[in-house]
Image 1 (cartoon, helix red, strand yellow):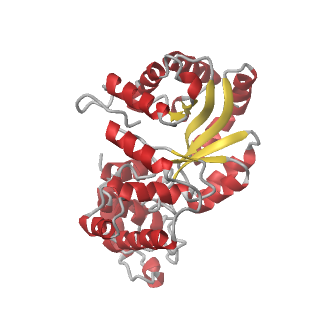
Image 2 (cartoon, rainbow, N blue to C red):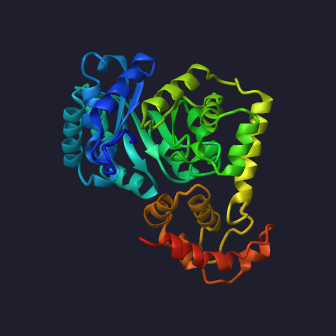
Image 3 (tube, rainbow, N blue to C red):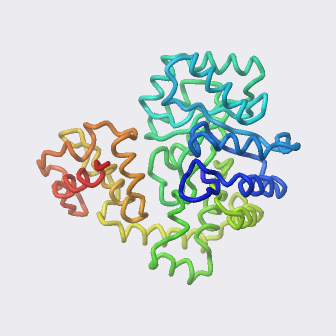
Length: 358
């Protein structure tokens, strides 16, 4: 989803450079390629298909995804899947994922009998393994994992700054404990961890460590992590990631390494605009607001320069409108319980005003 582009238009993939990067990666040991129907306005699958010509297709496991938000019938599933096979120039998909599952989409997919459709595609030899990518809370992930027996993998957002976000560490361990391979997306939080604020960069520099390598190593260090995805936009990023991967392994980080990452995690918390620790003491809110999640989205927007992402998650993500900051009635009962003494009733309207903008 982050292939090199010509100019500022995400749809205009620099095909020659992207193909060169993908093939270089495969030639140096990468064997898992992840794309999706909507990436680069539908052009990612086309470029990946071209990159896998000339024998490269047989050297990798190919993953792509059903756009759950565009599917309203099994006829849609048929049409989209035929299009994907054509774009990717292949007769089979090794790992086919239901894309972006959350509570609402999960219900909708079951209503459409997506499992019946998927199992027919497997029987026809067009799909080898099934999975899903996920953006919601732990309990929803648990329900998805437990409801269907034929999942091979799940894809979750996870990094050292997101241990308690969405599926989090709890979801990682639950899915792995159920025998699923766990594929990690957003290992660098959309690139934010690669370009830390000056105070945090100083911590990395003083330890003579690079933030990108340490973010990846922190993930590869965990036995529950099967694959780490990386959206690479330049050949130099491909080379750097391959070097990191060659030095990776489970339980390879030293105590000093882990202490360093903990120090960085603490430093990020210190520079958050709102000093929330997500302890949950403010909950439940009498009006049903998910207070920690609202505070977290605001902090991510301004600590990691992810305003557009936080706005999207606030207005179109998995959080119902009734749980958003705009529903606050300033009763201040949460403030009586907050150990950080945060003026939550003052923050809520500011959060809603900033994150509800188009």
